[in-house]
Image 1 (tube, helix red, strand yellow):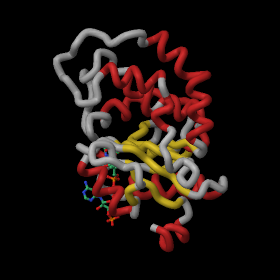
Image 2 (cartoon, protein in one colour):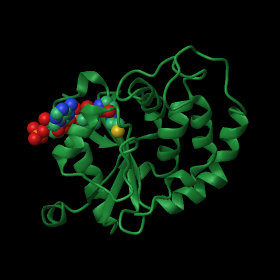
Image 3 (cartoon, protein in one colour):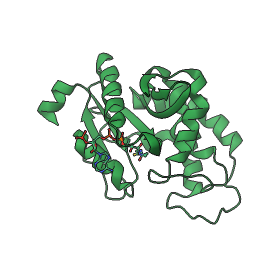
Image 4 (cartoon, helix red, strand yellow):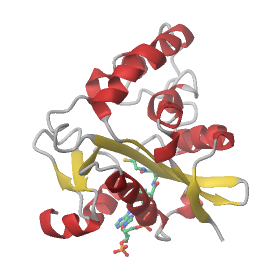
Length: 212
Ligand SMILES: CC(C)(COP(=O)(O)OP(=O)(O)OC[C@H]1O[C@@H](n2cnc3c(N)ncnc32)[C@H](O)[C@@H]1OP(=O)(O)O)[C@@H](O)C(=O)NCCC(=O)NCCS
């Protein structure tokens, strides 16, 4: 039976792989970009490097099947990313690679930009929603309640650190994820846009009942 446990450094490659396998609006993004390392290097690995204590996985023995990752203070994370992550990323990925023939809406050039310009994460609502998260489960783990439990686990960890609320940005094409977030009580933030939804929720379950 899979169980939720804190992230360990040995989980790193499995987390990167799950990120890739769920990065195309919830589906497999293998081969979409010229380098399969790009998506994990923007949407997963910086998080487990910067805040491993806010990463939780669902594991069946040594096999990782899903994760939630987050940062408590997005502004501080942006500073760290500029200083510690962007230089290495830029050196590894100086320019877009050969076309793959897949033409995603989020282009490879935009992905490279995301890796070097973390300011995109400085949303207007950061004072009220300082934390943000990403969650991804392999298809075999989906629909069994682990997504809800992972979100609850992260919300609890953030609440214990005094963080009042958490936000996330998502691909508007990911209809299933939107239904999931709506079901859990996430709401749209003022700077949310149709093409790039921005959702938020209080970290404390009690607070959630009142304000969400
Ligand atoms: C989206 C995701 C995190 C949801 O996790 P999950 O474990 O499948 O969801 P759960 O089983 O915990 O569902 C929690 C609730 O949301 C609802 N829900 C989940 N997915 C849903 C869907 N596609 N449509 C409608 N409702 C959905 C469930 O019915 C459930 O309701 P209940 O608790 O009241 O019974 C997971 O499916 C996933 O990782 N998908 C691929 C990657 C992805 O899209 N990540 C998000 C990127 S923004």
